[in-house]
Length: 158
Image 1: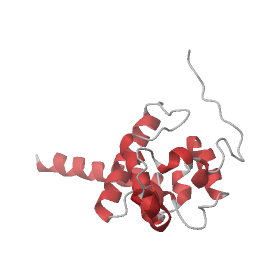
Image 2: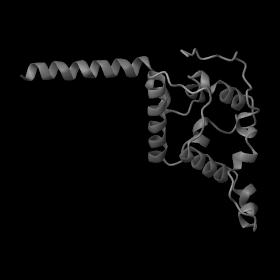
Image 3: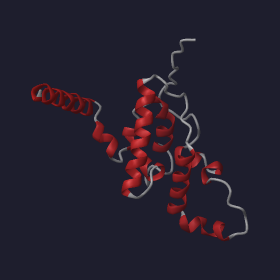
Image 4: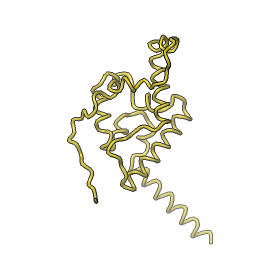
């Protein structure tokens, strides 16, 4: 009874280890923006960032994940799960849209990095009911659609 269990556990470990190695899983634990650009959906965002004003100061994680260690990796795990399942089930969107939680994280990071610049806004009587990126959308990623790569059409079965 123990031998089949041991063989099963070892086989599972071998499959998981091989999967992690083949997918270069550890690249997703770091801050290298090229890991974020593994999916063609990110081409325009990556190219816009790479050629934009924020490239010399930030990586994807500086804006799109919380600063603190545990929340950062919790967000990365959630995003990774959604990305992997979208890929596995061939449900990759033509354009990625930020979830409300993602918008809040990006907003917090905008304010954190640009605290001196926005401090006057928060002290003003003006209502602060918009995200920074609603007006400054092209700043971190450049103009929409900027890409050095050709547009890739997704095959449709319809």
